[in-house]
Length: 212
Image (cartoon, rainbow, N blue to C red; front, side, top):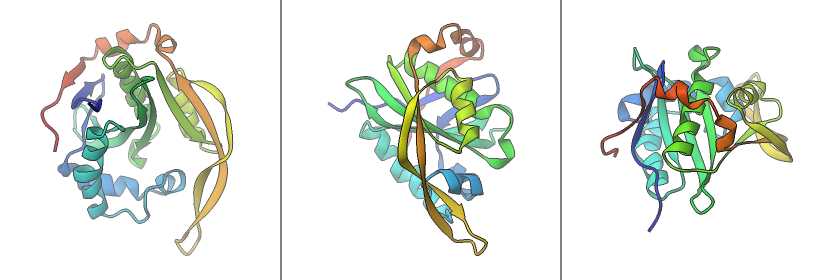
């Protein structure tokens, strides 16, 4: 039997992490067309609403059902506005390990949303899903992503040389691949000692109804 992540809603003081929904299509497409997203991810550029809809209705459910990962919308608690996405991928259920990544909309950057969402996801993985390791990989020049990893308590384990393909956009709008290094970070349950109270005070985890 394949192990899978449950449908879940995770609440923090300012955010709600929940399954992506078709209502997120316009905001998701807009967010993915940002220059920084194009530079540091493999999201196709330009990213269309059809692409967003396929991600939400086909790709994300397939990844969860196959046990490979989980995609969560990150929304503001008060406004329900989509501020980002947290993704779990390359999940190994035998060793209880997964890779975590995050994207934040341009207008929401600088507010600490990425670290808040990533920390909440890590706490849920360790406490509810009994995971033993979370891995993050950040491009060598992506200092913003590295700051998030450091903020939530990740430990830098080393460098994968020439293992990352970043992208640079030329004046004519075309994108060029540029090879760079990956910095590998890990987070273990003991790295979060003392951090559990923050999430407990903000509502914790709740189950979510059937998703797609």
